[in-house]
Image (cartoon, rainbow over all chains, first blue to last red; front, side, top):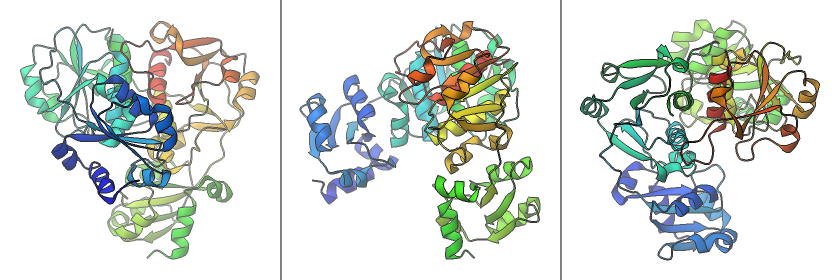
Length: 246
Length: 246
C-alpha cells in the first residue's frame, strides 16, 4: 500500500533539485533494478514492487532496504515510464572519482549532451567498449535523471561519470591529445587505434562550443555518403569508439 | 483557433489504425516539418502553427495545404512531444517502392525493431551512409509513428522503407549474401567494405529470430571490451555501416 507521502517523495525524485538534496535517485523495471542490485555499486534504500516480483526476486534485495508491496495502479502513479514495470527502487547516488587519469587510456568528454536518452546510451556504449571515465560539462543532462538511468541498461555503476567545467578540465589535461567528433576532419576509419586520448562529443543541435573546440588537437569525422544533416550523438560516439578504442 | 473536431482528428493520427485508414501522418517541430516540406516527397495536407512561425515560414507551405493559426496552449493539446514546438503538420503517407534490388548495394533488414526512437534513428543513419532501402519485418514499429518521424530528423523521405514478411523476402533474395549483427561472429573491423549485402539488425531484447538467423550467411560482431550486456540497436547499426559501407 502506497501512502500519499510516499507518492510525493518518489515524484519529487524526478526533479534534479530533490535528487541533489536527498542524494537519492530512482531506477525502474526488473532489468535495470536487478543490474544495479547485482552490481552493488549503489546502496538500495527502498523498493516498491508488485507481489509477483517480490516473490520471485525479493531475496536479492539487501536486508536493510525497505520493500513495499504495491498494486499495478499504484506503481503506475509513481512511474516515469509510459508502461510501469513490476518494480521501482530508490538508490543512493555515489560519489564519483573526481581524479580522472588520462594517461594510456581513452576518456570521453561530453560538451552539453542534453538529451537524457543520449547520455544514458553513451554511458552504455562506454561500458561496452571498456571506457571507464566520462567527463561531462555542467550543461549535460543529469546522470541520475530517470530516463538516463533507464537507457544505461545497468551500465550506470560501471562507468565513472563526473561533472565539471569542461574547458578548465581540458586545459589541465592538455598533455593528452584531444580529439573531437566533428563534421569535418580526418576520416575516423583512417585514424587507427589510439593508445590514449580525450574524445569530445558535442551538443545534439549545436555541436562543440567554440571555447572547447579551440583546445582540440585533431578533428575526426564520420564520412557522410548520403544526405542526412547529422548523426545522433550517441551513434557517433559508438562509431568513433569502435574505430579508435583497442 | 482549433475546433474540437480538429483536436480529435489530430489525436487520432497518433494511432496506427487511423493513420492506415486515412493515409495520413503527423510531423512536428520546425526542423522536421521544414525538412519534409523542402524534400517534397510527402504532400502536406494541413498545418497548425503559431503566429510567429506562419509569419516567418508560411511562404514555404504549398498553396493547397490549409494553414490554421493556433495558440501555444492549443498546440500543446495536439502535440505528442513533451514540449510542443511552433508547428505541427499533417502529411500524406507515400507508397513505398516494393521492388528492392539487392545487387551491388547494401540493404538493411530489421527484424522486429520495436522502439520508435530506434527505428527513426536507424532511418537517419541509413540516410547518412547512403543506404537507400530498409526492409522491416511486420513486427517493427510503424515508420509513421510520430516518435519515429521525429527521430528521423527529416530523413524519412530519403529512405525507401517497406514492411513485409522478412523470412519470405530473404528467401527470395538469397542470391545476395546475408549478414547479421550478432553477439558472436566475425569482428566487424576485419570484414572490409562490402560491394553488396543484406545486413540484419535484430530486436532490442531478443535479437534475431531463429527463422531469420537460419538464413544468415555470415554473423558479424562488434567486439566487447567492457561489461555492458549489449549495445543499443541503432548504435550497432551505425557502427556496422561505418565499417562495411563504402
